Image: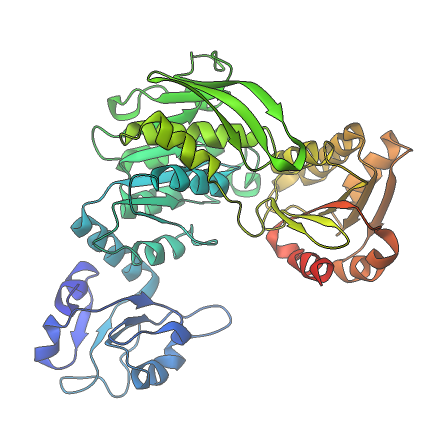
Length: 460
């Protein structure tokens, strides 16, 4: 990763001392606060903050070079090493593609509407039983996040498990061109991002752009119980491995399947997993039937990369949920289910389905879901209908769209305590009077609703 090679990879123009062209950078960041000695600072002109303003600061803090859309005042033949490009974001993608090609390690791309993060965590937990794995952290799964995740890879890493999230056509092609996955795991085709993709068939079309950039002789691992994924036959001549609950998938026989599924409340779910190499029983330490699908995807990846059934079982049972993704927090007063990172109708219903089996008084605090398109009112009402059928004890909603959740639930279930608040602030003020000691509380909404503030309030 010399400055000369980086400039060539992104068609940038190098300015700086000639002898610095062979300087190898140590890291890449677009956050001036995290610059490392010898790192490359990528100046991004964002909507709120222009990173170019921080170039003098990163130079002072030991940066090795700057990637910029403007030539800084002190750059030039004798100045600070700078690579100038038309678009810093596009340059980052090109540099990441170049870097990943050099490493020559397997890449597993996690794609789908719902469950990408938990599937990524499960897959990494399984593969970590045999390999050194680097995985996507936080929400670094988009056109900026994927390159920054790639830059975290080091020579000692043996497999990369990369989450790939999109909201429009063409975006998956951008991500797949960077990562060129050896393996693609597709979780499902749901209703997230209908605002931009129109229909579930549109979502399928957008997600399957990933196959165009797959490496030859790779692995395709699909949810065989998903009706839309059953339409995927053999991209690039690769026969998919299909997973599901029960041997028969939607229109195919599943290669890997689970049965004997038993829920253990908030403690998890157990099942027996059957594979071409044999069967084993396991306890998944996170609740919900959907976790069985995550375990099956992880098992399929484990088999593809040579793990034994014992290693796969151990990996599944070592799974840990992460903050905001059905993360269970026990306090002196409550059991909090922190599932507030994001939400879609399918994930809302899955979480409510788990809550109904919890101990104590079961409370759902739900907020608006974004990017649902013209059917957003009906989709919110559908969640309300499901909540009413679940028979939980209380439903508290905040946000204009979530009024449809509350109103629909109230029309179908007169035994449930149901309240709606116009915004988060009003809900936060009311919560101390609504909640009781011993409650199990599900907190879920799209990220823009900032329901993590509710989690913080209840933890305190």
